[in-house]
Length: 176
Image (cartoon, rainbow, N blue to C red; front, side):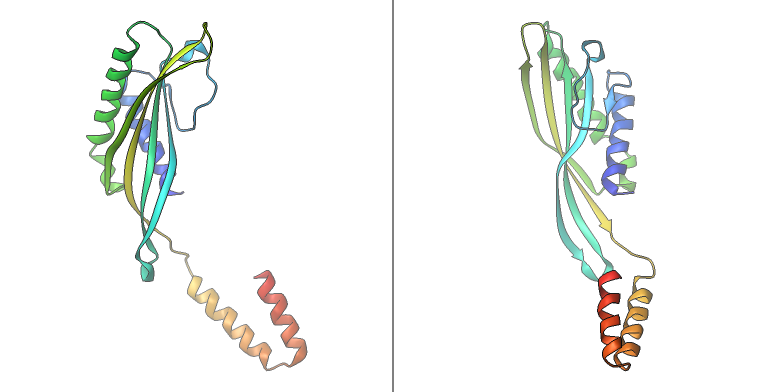
């Protein structure tokens, strides 16, 4: 499982427990929702920057942009409600002690309140919170060295076989 999926699922669990929206926290990009589903929260990633830490160990340092969209549809006190929910998101994500197993660091990088009026009947207020999440990703393929050495031995054996072996090597390379 990709570390982003684990991070996203952990964030959703934290937000379900710590934000007053019930189970209406979704690990996906915003989808159309029904009026009776508000307030709700969407959790997803926008970007994941990668840099080498240790190429010999196939470990990469990554920083992903975790986005949390808080959406509500009331007109009265919408700013107060969204601010309260944003504070709950902030506390839930930044004060969790279980992150140590998944990430190196998390910090709030942006918070943008805005409104989205679809028409006079349907009104939504949204606060988008963006978090920089730093984590390491180790890419290790079990037995990759053995497979490469075995392939090299096959090529060496076929080289000794002449023209027919060369065509077979070409076919092996294309299908391996």
